[in-house]
Image (cartoon, rainbow, N blue to C red; front, top):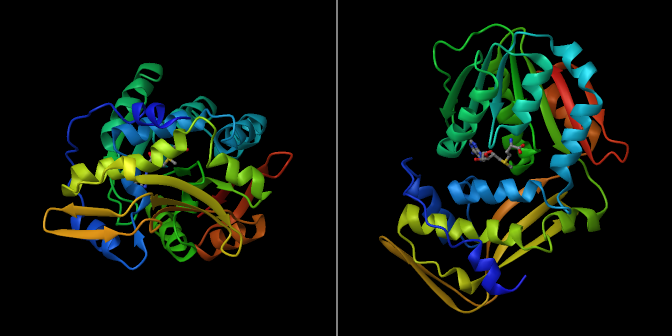
Length: 322
Ligand SMILES: C[S@@+](CC[C@H](N)C(=O)[O-])C[C@H]1O[C@@H](n2cnc3c(N)ncnc32)[C@H](O)[C@@H]1O
């Protein structure tokens, strides 16, 4: 993809976000010796739409593999969960996976928890048209904090749903803490259905984050545009290049933005000079071995696990009971 078409993917304007950003967290990340931006800032409206495009790319196997597992084992999944649950999806995005799950388990109530609540609200409205009797709530929350659900969300038979291997965006210790918080939210009698990306051939992993159409590059660069709006920074997207690779020692894909020129970046109340070649670390996506993730679920207080995978064992869907 040439630069002109890459920037055309980023050209649409959107109204300012109405959520209050954690400016100090963002600025501390930009000023750190190894500069970093949390991947949660990818998801403004445009970032959410770009991620939706990524899920349909030929190189991006996780979405279609997870959907194929859920379709192949639909009967087992439905049988293990039963009807009438309260479905709570964490990082619900476009709610497409919840839509498929709703057809299987006919929940009474659906709660979409996401930091990008404007995008999710639109998706949830779409779901309302398909399931008019479903009681739907959208909760704007950061999964790094305590999650509070509306008081009228039923307490019994809660099914947590955390697809897309988004758990892999957290450091393993953070992931364990999040799973424990989720367990607390689900309560006695609850269960968690969670999708996890598995360790595999490096070429397959790296292709998934370096697609030929350049959509992942646009998604990565868009975080700078989002920051410009959140903290009033003046990142010039043309100065930065997308880079993604598999760090085998840490079992994770890393995404970075490399400065292609010496770049001075300012924001309200501060600035930083990035030398050409210096980078900002924007995402980790941990890839797990089946046994390691099963142990993490156990440590988080989940028991009686089922695990379904695809024939190549690229992805796994776990069902674990509180
Ligand atoms: C990789 S997308 C997955 C979307 C969808 N669940 C799927 O599997 O296709 C991650 C989703 O989690 C949300 N998200 C990312 N970080 C978050 C955080 N810290 N707190 C709440 N939501 C977050 C994003 O807004 C986005 O909708």
